Image (cartoon, rainbow, N blue to C red; front, side, top):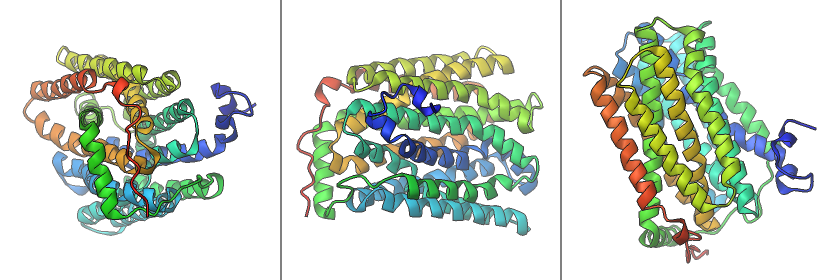
Length: 422
């Protein structure tokens, strides 16, 4: 019996069990895309020294990746709805690998590599736009039962968060040999994921639709006119969770190095602790919610509340053990909420428009990733209080939206969204 079989996915004749290697292959995408971005966070202080740049400039190495993805993700979602998921994912992974190669080559060979590194990161962002966001609708297409979709989304979010756990350790370890080695590892990871997708993931039935752009736009307008309240709530919450997470990681990375002298693998291991709690919470949440939309709402709400309370506690002390503890509990809240938000979208939107709507959600998440590090970098210069109040305020707004706007009894399913295929 394999480790995967022990995850209680059911008997051998269960669809989850039959598609376990497809799930593993699909889950490799968020793992690798997360490594390609989060792996650089603990290395940013070292990059500041090697490249002679400011904290704000180093944060842009994270931000440009996400900014590009924000604008291209909806395009990738539309293309995946029209032409198929795999046909978008595979070239995107290749482009992400090329981006890592450009950044690594620039850092290795050029005397002033900063701008070229950013160009490489832009290519990575283009690749990321067509990879991880398309995973969500692909999973929705792979299974017939909503509870199988929820369990698999939990696995994917767990893979995503495990990538965040592994990232600071691996980034610090690789940078210990050569500071730019994390860039050069990205093409290797991307190639592994491409091979897994090509050989182990079967193309879902009805994976492409002759969808005209004009009717596509009309369908988008119809969905938002009928369901704008809860869709907007889910999008804003997704952005806020990522803003808090990446802002928190940037802050914690800086404090551990600047105030306590932790660097290299030691700092990576400390950063991995709150991310590990996020990982466990994601997996547990994904298994527990099954196809129950009410559970999804309340897990999201209480997870967000827990996140906000823990962020506020950061005002009490800057001791590194205290910070690690409260941010670990904060990670539990974020990890519990993310699979619930994924499942609310995939189970409430008809298949023909699922790629586009979930891609908009992914764009909002990338917006949070893009904004978190530079905003926190600027606010850290002004003191910790403003930063904590901002993160707590975002948590409060998200909790109110989860409580008021997400109403499961009205969400399943978004009716009349068939996009008039041609």
